[in-house]
Length: 87
Image (cartoon, rainbow, N blue to C red; front, side):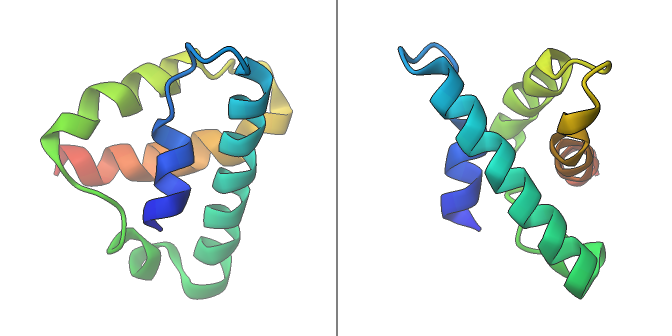
């Protein structure tokens, strides 16, 4: 999961903005599939839970447009991660 979260936490100031967003979306879809197969409580144990990740997670969640229905996997994973970070 460390590799998947590397793509999720990747800064969007890169020159390849669409490539980073595409990798982030694919990573979130993989994490969603893991949650669907094993259950979110099992997968949630492997999510990073450092306080320093709170702000990047919250910022990224704010940047995901709510009107884009294709990115619901991303919102789902970020909300799961945020729930771990605030507890």
